[in-house]
Length: 249
Image (tube, rainbow, N blue to C red):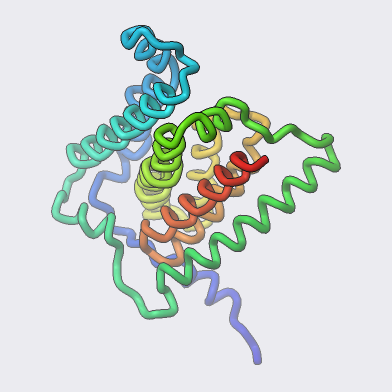
């Protein structure tokens, strides 16, 4: 049976070209988020909080609770930014809920395929990196200490990495940035550009390629399903697997 791959590729993305904000202000809005919210809340505030509470910056419970609070604040700040920059606020709920398609575009199916494909790609790139530049220590002593310190720190860490972080990053990099770029470019270009921004935002040069690949998979899942919940689910499950691996390693 002949498959028209060109038609399938053109119909891969179901993202709407009609977005609730001005496309021309995409990068200025993203810059406002990045420099006003992301950078200040991600770097430098945690030691200040620790000093105010008269606790060590390395205290696992303080570290986990502070990170959760800061990411929650960052998410709330970005949602407020989206609300005030939207030219049609009535369309914002549809932006988060997504549009309805046939069962072939079911978000659960997209999430399951995305998780499997993401784990496979991460495994392959890890093996390739080990052969090209040598094995890398993947243990994260600070994260492991938080996970093993107490039930409170462990629960807080899972809430942060499996709920708040995926919701924040998918809203910013897929829901807002990818959708905005895709409204004026081809969807695969939007996936590439948004994934590059996603990788840079983590300020981790050694993991930049893997983060870019992760961004591409998440962007593809979102573009195909048209629902933000699909990429949030993939992101959450992937982070949960990483946390479990760190806990037992």
